[in-house]
Image (tube, rainbow, N blue to C red; front, side, top):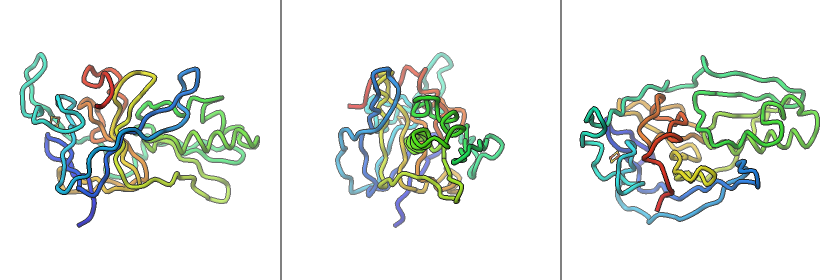
Length: 234
Ligand code: FES
């Protein structure tokens, strides 16, 4: 059977048992800027599909504990997991920046605010000055570290720079902010919507697990203000 992540209607992510689950920890420099990733805890292997919380309310994160079914908040509402993202590329929100050596493709609606693009002159400035070797290298590193897949760099020969990623799900741990981040889906794992339609397959993309994204199923940075995401995964 094909490995996939299946979005259930107003419920959790159903994950094929062959897909490993690990913690992906952001490593920062002295200023708190994100510079690289390291692996944290690996969760037990599974023999049956497993269910990851999508609503942010589970007391047993990262797993679903059924809380999405319970009324919560001031309005006493159950979780509304309606998907609003486009299944393909979001061309209306994609910009292309041309530099001397590199082109940056910026699909802004995928941003998860993990801040790998903030080093030096930021990735946009580095691309604009990519005729300097160290800035070209910095732009490639910053774009490739972008877990959300918002940023992609291409050189003038058409080479697309993509990191090599094993197929797994990373539970983002945002060390500088002391919060849990989205699910980092690595290596082109298919993501199937509740309607049965598969989203564009991406080498890297982040899925909302605070329940508050306005671009579901993808993260849109709102976990940063969600009380459900305070602290790290156990
Ligand atoms: S999706 Fe079930 S508890 Fe969050």
